[in-house]
Image (cartoon, helix red, strand yellow):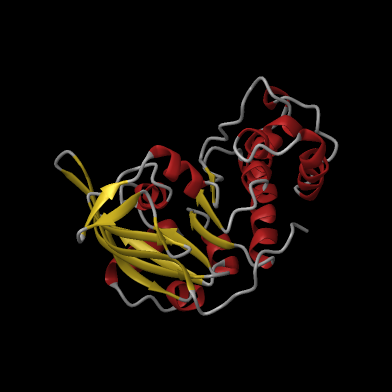
Length: 262
């Protein structure tokens, strides 16, 4: 099992307050507000173009918001408040904030010239400046825990898509984040490799890791999520416990979406 994160508490690790984001004339997020308590797993579902990916990228300041506030661990992400308005933080400060936020993308984004082991160690070595002798045992243990203990010396081109994505999860976890973001982590995988990645994510969830997961895997969301958020056209249509949202959706848009994907 992966190392356990802090136990669940009533405090919100993530607060997203009235966030707006546009690309030109296209309004992608229109007043999104969500709070995520520590240890909670939130799955974000909805049709393509609903703003799900943009939302998680804004949490990590990979996309700049137009207005609103995003707090992680009580700190404003990507900005600082000056005289009642927000101004963008220096890149060095943003980079420091990202150290506590793990991100797993649709595409694996591994360094092709590095082995699986070196891919997992790259963050702690380059960002945290930790010596190789100290982090190598931790990286090996992480790869063992995601079922890749026999692939330490393998390069990405020698791994299946599911194996590459498991390396990417181990790499994100090597930074010991307080929050993990997943953006459709199985969408680029062959059907037979989806399960192995979802199993690793389930283990993280059971360990108490706070997770926000954009996913089209409804079975995973129903089984693992503490809460499910349904988005469409840049707004939150409905949110609630997974069991309630899947079995007793309140909103007609949610009902239509779930019916269409079944």
